Image 1 (cartoon, rainbow, N blue to C red):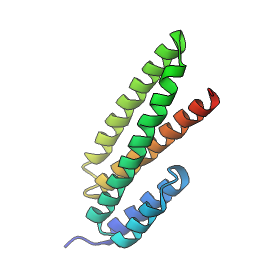
Image 2: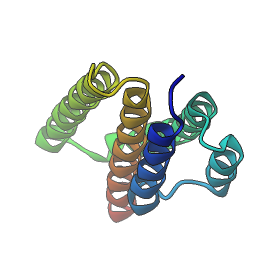
Image 3: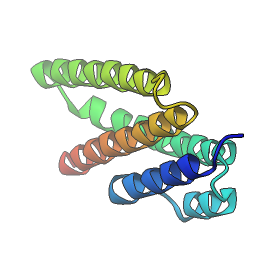
Image 4: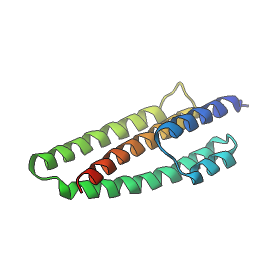
Length: 131
């Protein structure tokens, strides 16, 4: 039988990482509290929060895109493609880590959420700066 200790440690790491960077919602915090260290429930919480940030990311990107022209537009497209390539690569790499067992999914999701939130906040800052 697997010990719950690694899952609880992972949960603490996920919560610590997200608190600092992702500015997660109160709903996410409540969901994680309710999950009580059960990894499948925690992953469900993360999936819901990632969905919210993903929509916000798309909105921010769509706000910045039409304000960029010429070289700045090409740079934005290139930057977004590079970010997405790294984002997907790192998310998959972390999830497939054979040395991390089921905690690998939590690590991957924590990275994914923080990375999407960081990119979103950057794009939102650009969108507000261009107005």
